[in-house]
Image (cartoon, rainbow, N blue to C red; front, side, top):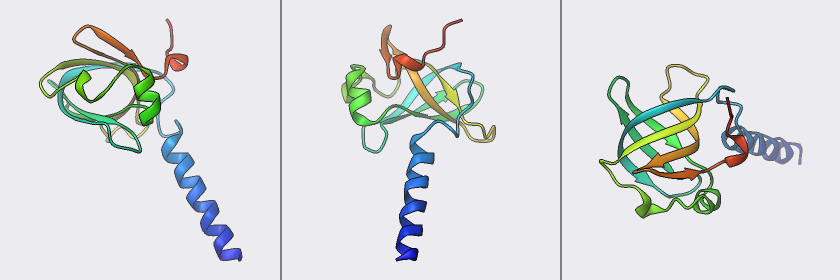
Length: 120
C-alpha cells in the first residue's frame, strides 16, 4: 500500500511539474521566427520555431481545449509562416523551450493564456 501511495504521489508531482509554470521564467519575452512544425496532439499542442540567430525552439501552447478556445487550430498556421511568440522561456538557459501566452501568425493574434499576459 505504501509503495502504491508513493508511486501515485510521484506521478501527481511529475504531472504538476510538467503542466505547471515552475520550469519557466517569471518574466515574459518575445521570440520571432519561422514555423517548422505544428502539432495539436495532447498533452500540449506545440510548434517548432526556427529563429535567425538562435536555431529551433519548442513552443508549448495550452492544453488542447485551452488552445482551441484561443481560436488556434491545426490550420491556423503552417510551416514557413512567420510567428511572433510572447511567452515564458525555460529557466534552463541551455533549453530552447518557451510556454506561449500569446502567438501572432499572419497578423492574427491568439491569446492562449490571456490572464497571464503581462502588461508593461
